[in-house]
Image (cartoon, rainbow, N blue to C red; front, side, top):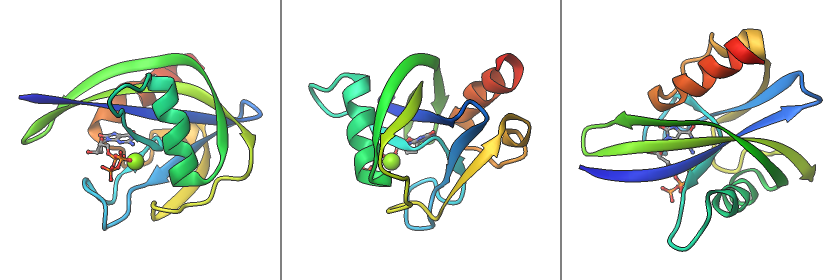
Length: 130
Ligand SMILES: Nc1nc2c([nH]c(=O)n2[C@H]2C[C@H](O)[C@@H](COP(=O)(O)OP(=O)(O)OP(=O)(O)O)O2)c(=O)[nH]1
Ligand SMILES: [Mg+2]
């Protein structure tokens, strides 16, 4: 089965809150929460892909820090390989250009959202270790 490499940004605000994004009904895998980001394109590093995707989807510039998780989840037709990274906004304010909703949540509230399955290892790591 084909593996799709996807990057997701765990954007924090003054260490307290984490930016979560709800996939819209028009997107694939609709109506679940995710870390904003998308597919790595040919020739891009994960960091480059993440900076590009966040600019496209949220209209702001980020700085990418360390990797948090590297998880795989098998869908019907392909495997999602999700790489998540810590990130911070360095310019602009996030606006939902493609998502249905954006929300800042505390670590405690994270596990109450209905996450895309590939994101659960990242969520667990944040809840257990931060
Ligand atoms: N961005 C993102 N995608 C995720 C996460 N978890 C997860 O299973 N996915 C899946 C949903 C999609 O099948 C795939 C990435 O899709 P995407 O729609 O964000 O890709 P993209 O931004 O490049 O958009 P497009 O070119 O496909 O329209 O990975 C996550 O936390 N963030
Ligand atoms: Mg995306």
